[in-house]
Image (cartoon, rainbow, N blue to C red; front, side):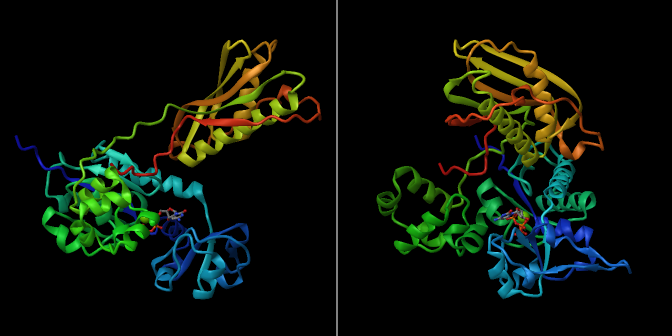
Length: 410
Ligand code: DCP
Ligand code: MG
């Protein structure tokens, strides 16, 4: 029984961080602009209202380019390039600082715009998603055009979309006509549009694999498609070799994995040795602060704020106690989290050595949906009272929320 062919779209925002900055500084449109400076790259507003921007040539330091406008790319300046090297190629390019909060906000806006079409969305990071548009009425080209228009209405930004039979081809395709691309790939397009590409354009063929392929004379996807399976197996093992052959023919059965909103984010630490609540106070205090700060970073990185703070303590007898506190406002600030967590801690009698300490923030919502709520204020932490003795304790963190960046081959 033949199933309906799938229509999978990959959407990737164009020069994302740079494009968000251009919304704020429209006078920079058409210019070579590089994102990646620190505070000293903040533009200065002059008395006449005009702005003075930092130039790449004046940059000193070890920073790297986060992204650049297409005008800067034309001069050879790309993501991850050292800023000093970039300055040699494009000394007149304008340098702006990064503002992750703004990028996260726009990320939330474009994703919300796509969600008005379908919930079948797989989040792949701040500026890209897969969308299963199989069940959306209309020609693929029209659906993609409608999505692009909705994204532009919501954000003022352009994106590139490819619609293909699977995720593999859609991902490769969204880069083919950047910026502002709208690409349709069918199986018939594979020889013409996919095979001429360098093998490393395939998501899952990293720099190392590309290098190994080159060493056996395989530079393009076409050459990979023609390669002898036995040869690939000797160099890459059975699984990866089989996967290479599949992708070279544009085959990929992976589903769009609809990302569910996380319910909570947490960090916890099991100590190398059980810690005494008073004798080891400085270490406990330090670890406690670290966990709170990390959870705050996790929340900010993923674009969430949370309202309920919880802690978990496991004692040396493995007895585990948790306490929760709901705060007056949502936050992603490590200091706020620590104040909330401190209140929780006060409600646990500390009579035994501590084996594990964990901090969790729940009742999450996307930071993009947060209004201008004031941050909650609470009191100080009781491990903090005094103590300067040092203690050799190595802790390891267990990330409970996993990154999903890599696309695992086969
Ligand atoms: N980014 C980063 N470090 C990198 C690459 C990218 O911090 N090495 C950030 C900045 C980008 C954003 O992630 O704006 C999205 O990455 P993309 O690879 O999609 O790059 P752009 O959106 O900037 O450009 P393109 O138009 O090629 O998609
Ligand atoms: Mg992009």
